[in-house]
Length: 226
Image (cartoon, rainbow, N blue to C red; front, side, top):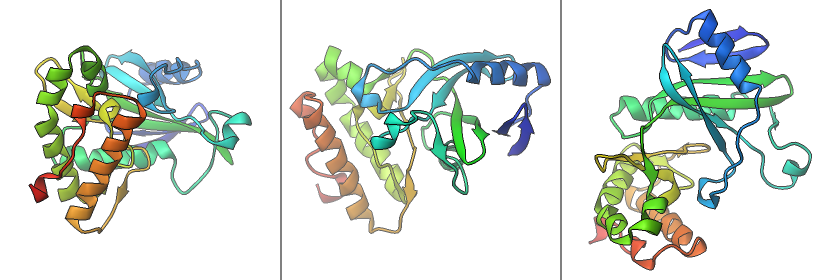
């Protein structure tokens, strides 16, 4: 990974980026992101950018929740690594292991004590979330549940707890291939595999109920216990 400081931003790139693209990159970061209108997409806001070296990419802006959002929606107290850098490293590891996640391209942060942070991912063209598909064609969404179970098994194999696994964080492309997204605050755990699998299933089912998605999208029993 290439880490550098450029125009008062700390940048981490998976591959080199020319000066012209870096300028375009920084200029884009200074624009406000469009607010999400989908509650299943959480607090993160995303927009899109095209760079000659990287093609079409998704820019993820990290937002504050809780009481602190009333003071600043986009600034976070600095830790040892920013949320953008941590998610980038998680995605790098999962991508290298062959899991279907968006290709991580880079991250950025600005500020000293209070920082803003971003993540950059290769765009998955013409993809919809499984939540969107469920609202338009429930039968199609249900037919994809076995593949969701397989993805959860892959997370368990890698000992990764995806803390916000739900249909809004599964992308489906035109070939019906599924991708896992949003690994913000994901954690490597040493929990027994069956317990980690069931954590994912319980989180999934809570989201189905909370967002009033069709109940036949529930994962009622993990593959390891069927």
